[in-house]
Image (tube, rainbow, N blue to C red; front, side, top):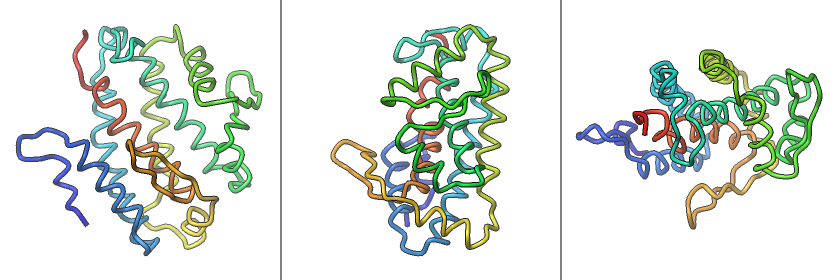
Length: 213
């Protein structure tokens, strides 16, 4: 398997291609414990970037436009929203059913209204989540991002029991179009964990580290 250091070449630049190759290599590991341990390491590496990046965002930067026109604060809130839902799944007493519903975009628990909400598509959830966080002070979103990221990580102990890995492995398969022309077939439990890292480390990286536009 590729050395994780290759995600950061000698020039110090993050390599998006190397990151995806590393993740795909992990996903293809047949030994589920080895796959799990590799993802635990990648998750920690991801948080070593993500948490300091979020902490370094000032209110001025948070209010500035992101690469897609949203404020940076709403980009972070977007990450928070999905991780909050993933934590709801992994922390549920009936994880299997909750995960199946989440993969259909059903059963999101809004902690403010205390209601379960279903969505017709990803864009609908993103719009709903943006509305929830629009206008909230950056300090609140920032702390929520830190807390939610650490909460999600807490489900993936370095010393898991076999039942936890079996749960991840025995969830319904999901075809993840991870890159143009590349579809990764992976159990949806593993997918939800992996996609949270992609959010933090790759998909929104530019908006987490850029200066105000």
